[in-house]
Amino acid sequence: MSGVPVFPRRYYASLRQFLADIAWLLQHRAHLRQTRAVLSPAFRECLMLAVTAVNRCRYCSFAHTRMALAAGVSNAEIAQILDQTFSACPPDEAPALAYAQHWADTDAAPDPAARERLFCEYGVLRAHAIETVLRMIRVGNLLGNTFDYLLFRLSSGRFGLTDADRRLV
Image (cartoon, rainbow, N blue to C red; front, side, top):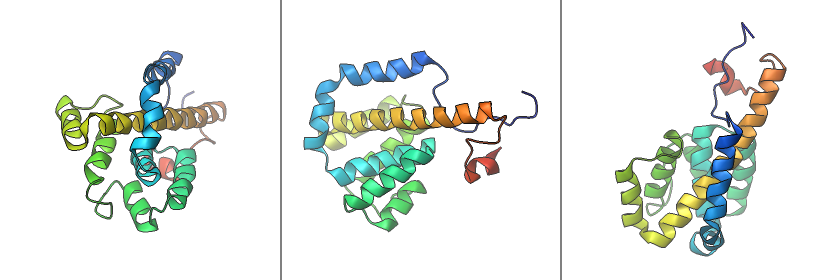
């Protein structure tokens, strides 16, 4: 397809990548169950928005913005998270949000020192819950982006891009 720009967002390039993320979630079912008890709904939504800001899934951005508002997160806090800044966020959540951003930037392969700081800051139970939320939203983000990638490929680049994507390609 010459003349078609490159799709600018991360997506599942293989079934193997998708199955690896699903396998991780299945292997960590206990963490999935604990997440609701350990992290507030507002904090979970903020974490999801931090990862979504990096992966730029338009579907997750819309849905989790609505869920964050319903959970009591302010418009200002949501806007800053989507702009990848955390000054409006509660100070006790900012380290986790910065980690979430780093985690997404590194395609779920964070620096070991950053991961260690997360566990020191939040303890084992909360850190595992945070990482579980990050993995869940990664699956959602990459599935949404994979759908857009398919639209993009099938339409020779006419569909599947957002206005922000078009500025990048």
